[in-house]
Length: 306
Ligand code: 3PG
Image (cartoon, rainbow, N blue to C red):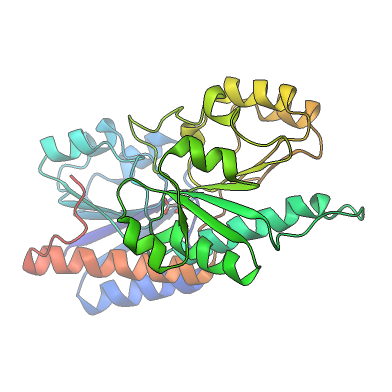
């Protein structure tokens, strides 16, 4: 029997677990939910007899791939696949896929929620400000960036975006002001929402030079990845621009120092929760299960990333 290991240190919502199981049951597959595991060693042990895996931000390292002797496919139920060692997977003929778009709305809603939270001084009872009329810069106009733009239009924000991979006409057709350079985007924005992936080109790319282009009162919102921020550069900007704010769904390494020094100007969720909704879990989880079945039964490799 084909065995699918659903390895989620941060488990899916119960409704999603039920539906993933039903989907795999119907295909005649066995499903094992390996949740909240304590260590990578436990994961390495659990993958031994898996033919397929569904994961979230779980670290699928070279060691995990090497231990999974029967593994044919890993589907990252989500967008970013920087947690999977693609080279090791390819070297072992393991296909890796993601499920783009399936959890985007949840992330987009959180981005706007974090903007409101910061605009209203962390709901501390003091007089804050409104999003209406403010300029929102969106770095990367993909599935999430586009949804952020749509929701923000409802708040009456002016939308700007920078994305060298999306045609200017596409953004203009959606009433988005297109920036020619990333520097232009940072200069114009009152709020800047990050939606870039973490890869060799983007890691630490949000650095001192770029952040120094921002207005003193600007708010940087990160629901993307911790790794894209140059944390030393960020700390320096926080010192220099005394009204600059940073809210993030992924706590930085220097979290405690930032929280202590810049109280009220920084906020970090306790755990990455952009995709932590029942809807997002159901969408991404079922898509992942269906992609595994389609690949193993018919060789369909849509959304293969390696
Ligand atoms: C993604 O890349 O899809 C998001 O960051 C969600 O990550 P998570 O599944 O670990 O919540």
